[in-house]
Length: 147
Image: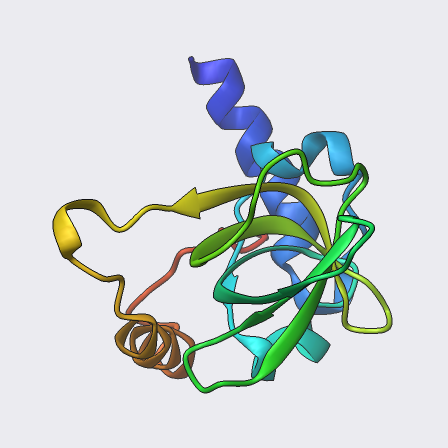
């Protein structure tokens, strides 16, 4: 356990330090901390691992791309390595890298099912993200490089 925590901290310090940020290999993306972002923040996270939650708007006929809207109604494009094998609708969480064109290059995605008729409040989620990003000193979710 200690080895895995040390490895995660080592990896996260490489990528969370703004001016020393380096791209992460896609295979290791699930092992590093990922900020949750909205469309407005895509350009600030180029070549970095992120987590994005949005409502599926349109799936391309090839199944290799789809668009998602965040809680402000802004649209992002998600690109997949392989075509979809299932119908995609509703709220989805995408984990991936932001390309230099602002496209989310998905490593994985999860459908957030609305159980028992309780809908996911995407607008409230987006407002919470704004607070987290506006006050990072109170929500230190990324590990900063030390010394």
